[in-house]
Image (tube, rainbow, N blue to C red):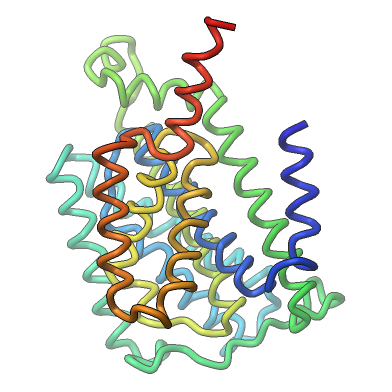
Length: 305
């Protein structure tokens, strides 16, 4: 019933709230949920997810603008690129653990940022502008904001469903076992590195889908999408919403995007200070995140009832 209500609210939302804002929330929600698949369930902290998000944004934008591909093909191409990049990152990073894995992903992401800055098709500091939204399947004009919203919403629902199915599959249970006790998982005969690599590929591919969607929504791909700040932002979204919860990162994305939109014009650059303070408060007082704390509270009440 809860998921049915959420679906109905999503369908009705563009008639109540500005669709472009909602599309931005959905893009970042998918990005955060994809990142959480790696951190929350595999226990791998990547600080290079901006490479997948921003890299796919550039590829999707280029495929749509320079090569004339339809939006669905541009997104599929960008997703494939991000998944391949995730396979490369994962192959190099999973050889280490902890802070070393995190720093490897950061270093590799900085290489992608440098390429985005220097390669001619990206537009350098100006970014790739004027990306056409095109017609979905040659039929639906995505220049209409309402039509574009429903397309983004459908992709988000599909991506979220894929993450949910992955988490609740036997493969997802193995990921949790690796997160909790990797030596024990190895002793049970699981190929830990292969499972970690697949998690990297899935997370990167879905992050790329989110990046390509954002490029189509705003008809723009910029260096901001591939900057390391974006990697930090998705970590913040996941932690605020609740790492290891399915819907928590989406809630975190809603909180962060709303704060950025509402406070940017009022307090300027101080919005980063405010978000930093919220992050500190969340870590100190709500270590499970918003959704994680609510689930824990419900779990404590259930035995009493």
